[in-house]
Image: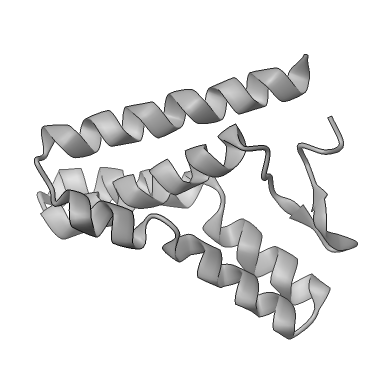
Length: 115
């Protein structure tokens, strides 16, 4: 049951981020080009699992992406809002598909698998 809640929560965040993005009338080409950009953080696993998990998790927590949206909105900087919304949509999409924050034990060992 908890996994389904996390998946559904991811779907809701994904849809909300897309909706907010559409309200700003930003480029959809840019949205789809950069939707998977946060996954570049997995390259840190080339260093070791400890660094990889920490960098990946830094790029896959809602705290930073939503703070970026808030900062962009406060200072009225569209590019910052765009980055934050794309980033938030990416995290929501990941959660929707069952990808979670990583543990150092293995790349496939996530907080969602432990629910």
